[in-house]
Structure formats: structure tokens, C-alpha cells
Length: 348
Ligand SMILES: [Fe+2]
Image 1 (cartoon, rainbow, N blue to C red):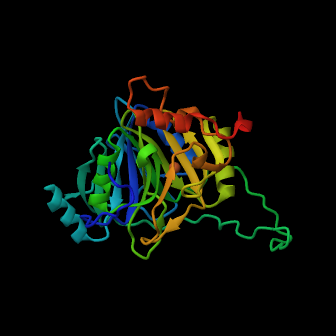
Image 2: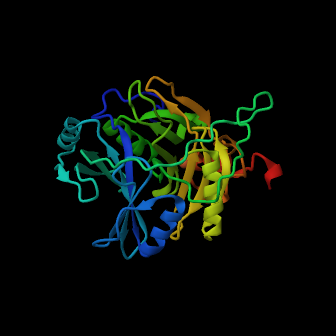
Image 3: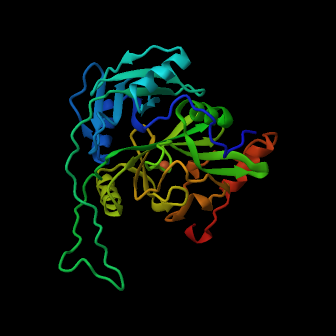
């Protein structure tokens, strides 16, 4: 077993940010409609079978959609702190540094993680000017304080302005290998780890090591499961009202709602999950936790109720299918049991 809480002794580099994600789609036009309704903005018409989508933040792009004969998650990209780091990782992996063939340019090192996901490490992409969006509705009337006087809250249903990719969640059969691969190369720190009997980690939330600068509670999460697959991509929007009005817009456009609105426990995000036309999950979130590098790792027993604080119960499709075969390892049975029982029967 890999100790879940020890920080990497000496990672090759410490990545700075999650940059973008990449998908193959049989119906790229349908995917473009979903992404626009979800809150992304197309950068230009598709060219050479590729289309790029930006957020309201400064990333050169957030989503790449590649026209293909099958639907697939291709991978994601992390930003480097420095050009030196880019070359350091390239030397460690005996890989070339290549120009980025996408909006913003820059250079990249292309890796493949133990599960076959493409992981690009980027430096030098030209940032975009941020787009204007409404301010957070921060004046909240409380029982004993009413700062919002003569100013009604009347936001209209509209796509939730998505600012950036917040995190990627991957399911893996090789949890220890994947955890160590990402920690050793990119300096990921474990923010919270959920374990089953004997302290075996099966769910981990990993943040970037940005020293005394805050980092999202997790930019990467890993879940042990029966097969390697991408579980969801999460995006940050403004606040609870943006999540709610974004939900109204997506409902009006006929997209498939999956889970929410609720608030997570580990990471504290207000969340809402949707499915694109190919069935992949996308999360809107607001008000997530951020931590500096010295924040200690939390270790918790895995429970279904520990995944969210309020909102509807976890959909069955968000946990490994089961029950597992009788001869499956005890750890698989323990994990299935931990996620099978609805912790709040009044929700059923
Ligand atoms: Fe998430």
C-alpha cells in the first residue's frame, strides 16, 4: 500500500495550473452546442476537424473538440511555472519539447499517464483578455443584517459563465500507480483521501503545490474502480446564482441533468452535474475551497454520505457498478458497500 499522506520528497516539477481538456467527438457540432449552453465560448469556426472553446478567464482555451469516428476523452494539460520546468520534465521523460498546435501557441511536453490519458505540460501560451461577467452577488441579506436594500436579485436564465477548468476526475484500476505518477512528476499534494478498511486509499483529491499561493482543493481526483475512464470535468463559475441560472438554461435547452444542485464535503464546492451528448459528465461549481501548500492532508473513511453535504442523493451511476463478483478482492467489496447504502433514506 502507498502511504496516502506523505508528500512527494522531490517532484520533478510543480505544475502551476490546470489549462485545458481535449475530447474526440463523432458529433462535434452537437458538442459545440452543449459547450455553448454550458457557458463556454467558441474561439473560431472548426478548422482541420478541431474546434476550441474559451472561458471568461485568461486561458488561451479551455476545451479542444476533435472530430473523430468515436467519442473519447483524450486528455488534459497543465501549465508550467517556468520554461526551465518544461525542459526539466522533458529531460526526465526523454521527450521532445514541441510547439503547441492550438490557440495561444507556446511549447509543450506530451506525456501519457499509466492509464493512457494524454497529459501535456505547457509553457508560454499567450493569455487572452478576460471577458466581462457580472460581479458575485455578495451582498446577502441575513436575519440580523440586510445590506441589500432596494436592490432585488433578478438574474435571468443564461449559460453559467465558465471561467476555467477546475478539475479532472479519473477512475483507475491502478490507483497507487496513478497517484504516484502524478505526485512525482507534477508535485500534486493530497488535500483529502478517502480510505476503506486497512487504510487503503480509493479516492484522492490532489491540489497543485503553489507554495503560499492558494490552489484549488483539487485539480485532479482519482477514484479506484473496475476500469480506467474519465469521470468528469469540472468548471468554475461565479456563484450559487450562476449555477442555478445555468441549470435553468441547460434544462430549457433539453440537456440531461445528472446531479445537483448540492454542496460537496471534500472541497466544499456548490455543484451541479450535466451530461453532454456523448454521455460524459460536466460539473459547474462555485465557492470551492482553496489551500496553500502547508494545509494538512485529511484522511477519511469512504462513505457515500461523505461525498456531499446537502442536495439530492448520489446517482447510482456515479459509483462503480455492482455488486462485484463474489471472488473480487475484499477491497472492491468494501468500496462497493461503502457507496451502496443511501445514507439519507428520506431522499429516496
Ligand atoms: Fe468534481
